Image (cartoon, rainbow, N blue to C red; front, side, top):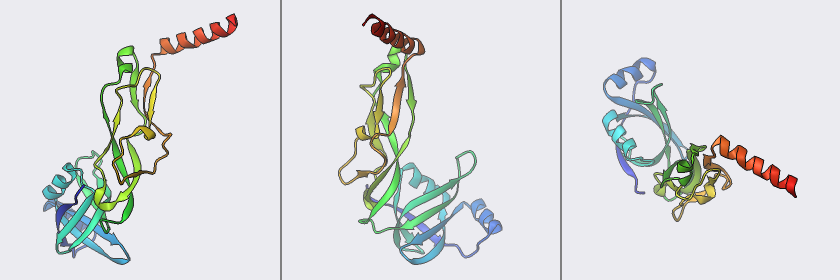
Length: 197
């Protein structure tokens, strides 16, 4: 995935009062750090930043007051998860390897849900290692073969070339919980079979 562009300006005023004033003006505070270089306090236009997040950006090329490349390392949202209050940028050479968290995207339809089972997403994100310039937006996971009582693990993720899974491959990401009656019936049948033997 190629990096996206963000225009930034330097933030001269620090502190809560200044931060609130900037937000009212439609500017979101950010911090750029890493690679043994000085920390920079920045401001980004809110609408431009939201457009960046809508494109599921991770790697970013900064232009304006600072010319650099970075990855979004942390985002602080308001309590409702609607507005970005602040975000951290970690300087990165886009060819260097980084470890990041990537969302899991389920596709297909689990047959188990038509068998009375309930689809449960146990883990929605996984950790991967890849170059900063090729961080995937998400990793796909097919649930088309999941019947009631079955699950899918991180080992079954569709991982693009150049990306290494860091999360334990045995981690159960999604499962189809069998109907309680069916689980009891299966247990009873197993018990009866043992008694007959």
